[in-house]
Amino acid sequence: MRVLVVDDHPLYRDGLVTAIAAMPEVDVVGDAADGLAAVRAAAELAPDVVVMDLHMPVLNGIEATRRIVSERPETAVLVLTMLDGDDSVFAAMRAGARGYLLKGADREEIRRSLQAVANGEVVFSSGIASRVLAFFAAGSPAAVAPFPELTEREREILDLVARGLTNAEIAQRLVLSSKTVRNHVSNVFTKLQVAGRAEAVAQARDAGLGAP
Image (tube, rainbow, N blue to C red; front, side, top):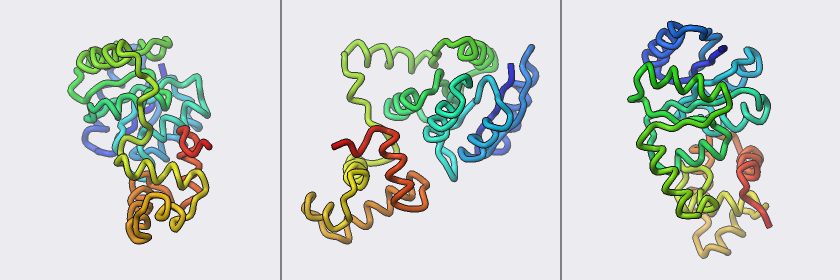
């Protein structure tokens, strides 16, 4: 099994690489410190599994997962993160991740999870699994919102940006000042780690926002 390890903390990443490389029949083919580097490495190294952190610079793990799965559907993404909120879990699964573990997972749990996602199965840390089952038992999977790092207002404004509205038009529609809208748009760009409006619109539409 070929594995790519992605995490922005050097000490943790190095330790994870060492631990995974010691597992039988596993070859760590590379590592990356940010989401964009992960997308490039996945394209170049063709791993079977990418172990992905979520909170990273340049490109967050959710968007990196979305791009990797889109470009290489045969590659499985196993999230390994400190973020345990429902928004993060469901955003990762919507992006195409096949597993979600918390960083408290021990070596054996990581080994089993790597094998499972490589075989096409879906895995969760035990505490998360019970919440996922409860969520779907409630019959509301459509309620999961993309971009969990955004506030509700920021997500609303991103949706309007993706519909093609200018800042002035958004301000008029939401009865906000132009300055407030500019601040929200700037915060959205920062959180999504995009360079400008066009890139934000592309990400938003990929996630289902901006529909008429």
